Length: 193
Image 1 (cartoon, rainbow, N blue to C red):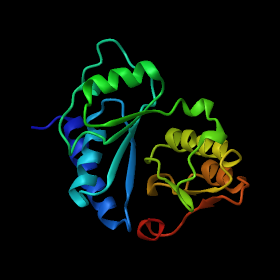
Image 2 (cartoon, rainbow, N blue to C red):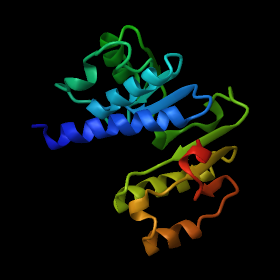
Image 3 (cartoon, rainbow, N blue to C red):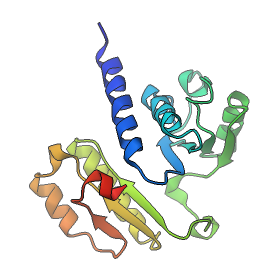
Image 4 (cartoon, rainbow, N blue to C red):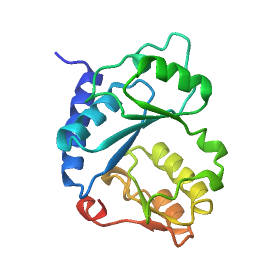
């Protein structure tokens, strides 16, 4: 008998595989990197679909003294090739554990210096797909709104999970968002990828 979390992780793996198989010209994938097993499964799914894809994990939260799973290398297919660390202390901790990963100090998203962002792409699109929980949709929507004016050259494509597609408060909030770089998508996932 599998635990609820193990069942969820297996479901995530299947969903990640299906999602990544649908994507066209996949070059790089990003995920949070906080020690959760579903993050490792995301990297594994990406490498299983295309071994050339670059896997990148970004530190979103602070680290703790005895945090085990975050600093436990699991191998090439499960570890991110790039790790975006919040600061120098985190960078050192990651570098001590992940000798084959490129660890970069990217800073906190709360303190982005717009002039330092690398312009290595002709155009950048970000697809935002929150889970089917209203509080997560609101959180990710608020974060996306905060990015619209700072990253005017980035196109933000926002999708709703079918479970929350008909919640009036979310639809109302989305309809008030202004910005040429914001798109609320009703397309198929395949078209958005």
